[in-house]
Amino acid sequence: MIYKEILPSLGLQPFIKNYLLVGYDKPLPVNFVTQPYPTRIEQSLNFFARGFIYNHTPYTGESVRVSQTALFGQQVLRLNFETNFQPDFLMLMVIFQAGALNRILGIPSQELTTQFCDAEPLLSAELRQVNDLIANAKGENEIIGIAEEFLWRKVKQVKTQPNGIDRIGELLTTHPNRFSLDWLADQACLSPRQFERRFTDRMGVGPKLYSRISRFYQTFQYKEAHPHTDWLTVALYFGYTDYYHLAKDFKQFANSTPNMMLQQYAHRPEVMVKFLMQ
Image 1 (tube, rainbow, N blue to C red):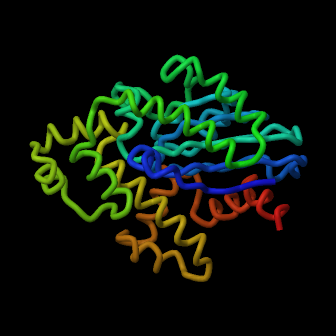
Image 2 (cartoon, helix red, strand yellow):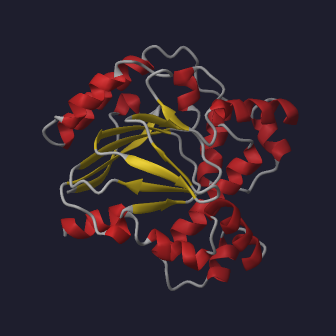
């Protein structure tokens, strides 16, 4: 059993925020096979080396099997990921820094917004072989080494340099909703209209929505880590005008009330993996 966040090697850190490695070799209880996935600031490459997942969209009721190697663009609505019941599952998630996926792919990021698509046509046909190597690797160090060997080859081909949009994306990831659009545009040496268009191309959504998603998820994470702090206190701490303003974001980004989302999130598969590791 494994659930571990791993930092990339130093040279890849401008592109890769971290890796998430999840694996288990025992069947999960039925009430732990669905992961409620509220919206967060995240774009990733996912290797499902053993086993697979389905995405169930609560708004439409549709379930779709996710590709064995999949690119996840910026999500703006809640998703539910359902793991298979087979007792052999291994996933490596490569989580990108702000703007990095746009630099690697060379296409506007809004083309991937709300998408989780087969990575091979967009990134490399080599991914199938990389996924097979990960599936047969012995230990986490070998898994990360295989992934990084591939990622090094990709980032060496990148010709676009990081810019002010990337730095502002990083800023809004850690300090959301504290800056005006005019100020952000001025920091990027662009007009507000130019800034909004280029930010959307780079990040997949506009700066206002990006900031709202970042604030929402930070609020949610804080409450999960501080369960005895009441929701109003948490809401005000993160700049919401009141609890109802926060509840509105939960309705949009989690399709749930705040308390219900916490209850559902407590039954995601990685919680059971952590429990079985103890």
